[in-house]
Image (cartoon, rainbow over all chains, first blue to last red; front, side):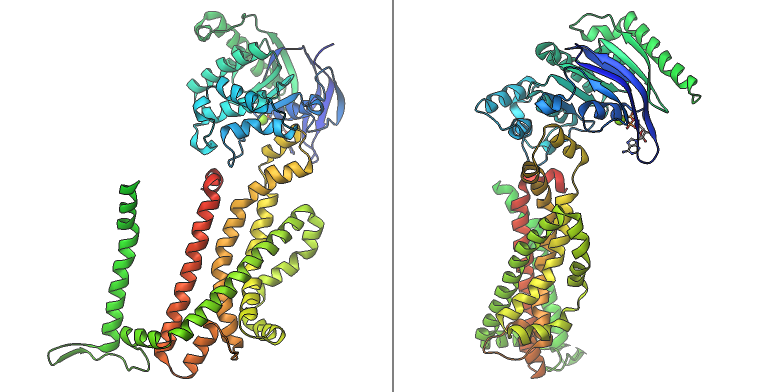
Length: 253
Length: 271
Ligand SMILES: Nc1ncnc2c1ncn2[C@@H]1O[C@H](COP(=O)(O)OP(=O)(O)O)[C@@H](O)[C@H]1O
Ligand SMILES: [Mg+2]
């Protein structure tokens, strides 16, 4: 059985905006899928449906990881780090464990996670004392501290500079290889989608729909050098074309 | 640390102190006149209109018992009213945040707290509760309540939507959300409300007593101002005004310090 099996998901908001129409896809266990599309095509909406935050108007979500949140197996990384400003890094990372009723092991888990994202020296710092990239690392640590089965990421590195973004891409992949969670990573950045995903789902807008599905053949671990290879550039081209095609089809290019 | 605190004194304490001396000198010459030898540049003001600083000082020393009693009573009354408004305001804000229905129902009456002229209800308060401490405290309470309620309700309800989703994803209970999100989120808002309320409580306490003033065996600054102006004791009036200002300043500074202490950890939220 797949981890996620989405069948004909549609969602129309109360104001009449149809954000998604007839979206179907599957995600295997421990798979890393990039969800690529321009702003406003419904990526965040789709992610919120998967998270169970928003019920679809029609369609169903099944699979082992459906309703993962009810078993405390789901984490979500938001566009902004969303750290609680009155808590230190360690206390922020600890939050999901507290909400689930922290056990004796919690402090060790928290320390390990904080160390793993490279914030060992900042465990007792407050969020406003950290750079944007460090805040996002803390946010990742908070998401992974519960050992989620399913990790949803909504343009988490979109607000960071390119260098930091690339570093975090590499770190995220090594965390994924270590913990083997299922990941759905939303981005509107083509090369980020290619670098990260085993598969890239391309979404097109008005209404949001999946236009293409691409298996990216590069083996893991993916090193920084991959970005400067000719094959990487080719894949960027293929996906860019797919996005533009999708735009052309709905008559908006 | 030592060095920076010395610099702090230089930058923030010295200038106002210097200005104080300048103002004192200006006041002195304005009241008593300026002359060089026989040449009169400014003849000064009559004693019954503007007393000299030294006359005010003499009056203050002579009447120190009365001044201290009045200042103490107003301070105690205003502070009690202020603290009561913090407790009651927090409670009301909490109830409002739990039920939008109750909030809508009660909102017009909360507005009433802000719009009612304190001078209009001051006589009523004195009739009901007597003059002195109780009257001062109740007036201060009424006038400080509104900013606590509005800021508090805002802090308990205006949450970062992503933080709300975070709590939902991790299946936080209503109580967990209250304790770990709503209440901590509201603290800076309560502090903002408290800063406003602290200043208002002193003004309310003085103004209310001033307008409704009739003498008890104990009275505060409001009544002292009323009485000394009625008796044309202009130097005592000045002393009472200065005490009022110092009291306001004292409470303002105290609330400021308390808020800095409370907000140590909320910096990211506030500034
Ligand atoms: N709560 C909402 N109410 C109404 N319309 C919404 C709401 N959220 C998003 N939309 C609309 O749905 C569409 C998809 O939005 P979104 O999922 O945020 O896109 P993306 O994440 O790809 O940028 C947009 O046209 C947006 O304006
Ligand atoms: Mg989005």
